[in-house]
Length: 143
Image 1 (cartoon, rainbow, N blue to C red):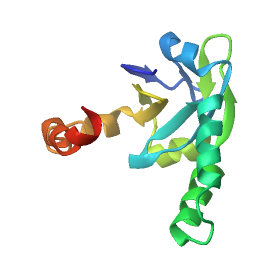
Image 2 (image 1 turned 90 degrees about the horizontal axis):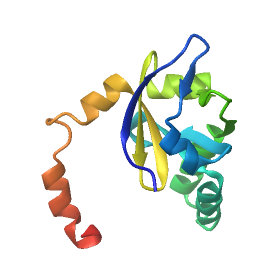
Image 3 (image 1 turned 60 degrees about the vertical axis):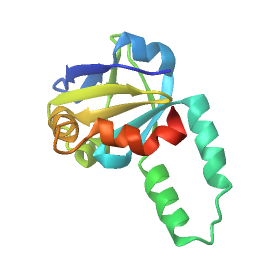
């Protein structure tokens, strides 16, 4: 399970350090793709295979399924961490997430998310995220 928030900076070659606690769960190679809310999703290969299998079972005749599948998988790449614990974020994904320098890496249960630090700050601001209201809405599903 992935948890925590970690602020890092892209180096000159557009690499970012993946925190050691998260690297352990991701393994030597993992999948990275466009996520929701303009962030990047990062999955352990086993979790990626599970998601891929579920998506394959969706009806191809539905336009929304085809659109999601194209968008989700076309942005995907298998990545490896170098000896210093860094990974190169592909240009298309950096652009999608608006990542320029500061990066917020967060653990979210079965995945890791990579955000522009500024976008994460905006997303988690009181105006945009009312944690208590969301908890009330999801109470029957979660707690």
